[in-house]
Length: 415
Ligand SMILES: *Cc1c(COP(=O)(O)O)cnc(C)c1O
Image (tube, rainbow, N blue to C red; front, side, top):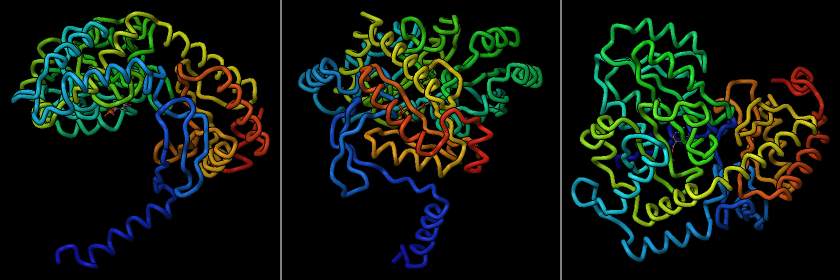
């Protein structure tokens, strides 16, 4: 018996420690399609409850859009269910090639390569294009998948303080002797909803001969005037050397990701990136869905425009209601509560009021910065937002935090 009682006990203790620390993740079962209105079983075994979803990455409301679902059905019927192969053996269909070309067009880059997920794109890209003569300089708040990609690459790694361009410049000077320098950032940061200073970053990188890498997972499809991403918002389209993004958020929300950018870098990924070479790519049914999503978004900016309006409405409503928000203009709207228990209590009470919004606390966000991260969608109607605002206000009153300063909330509830 190799999995002895002693081994089992050690894991059981570790799991208990996670629970004691209050960070045990308990999943909640949704019994409906992903949308603004969902049916949730929580706690497990409880009767189903209809709630408004305020925490999905379904920014454009496309996760169960009828046209996308229809396109996915057609893909399933015409190209089958699975490929049973990686791309370079016999796992490439014409629609994979089509999707790569469409993404290239949509993002305004030179070329694109699909990955099973953006996690895989980030895991594979760095080691495919860099070696030990190079340096990767990353923002200190980049996504976990980028950190993993950096770990898998033999190039040297350094960081700069979050969005601090003076500090980045120092690091670029410090590593002047390296063969290649790559500056790495998220486009929109998922926890605070702030946007990277890509305009300044591109300028700095030109000055110091560095490449720019942006993970636009929380931007593709809706940030910028026509939803191309942070590079559009910051006026640097065509100047980002490597963009990675996911199809698992705004772009239909199923799964899949890509690396898009300079032709040679993409080709290097095709030759060398391990998650591309050794894992099946996106299933035909999903490829067909994403193709439809890009078609919808290329034809009209209606959905991202509606998202922008909804976001303004939501931010204004919460601010006027007396909540403290993180500054910003993206659909990621963190309601700051500072205290971990308070964030959990308020999340639970909101749920009772029919609002699904999750509280985040350390270690997901820094100590003393607990919050409820709300995310707005083009799938929300004003009635959804009004109902959610009423619930937030009711619960905010109960805990007496409306119109209070950060200091006052911390004095009352602690960090
Ligand atoms: C969600 C996310 C990913 C992972 O995307 P998947 O396609 O689900 O693997 C990667 N990077 C960032 C910044 C993300 O927010």
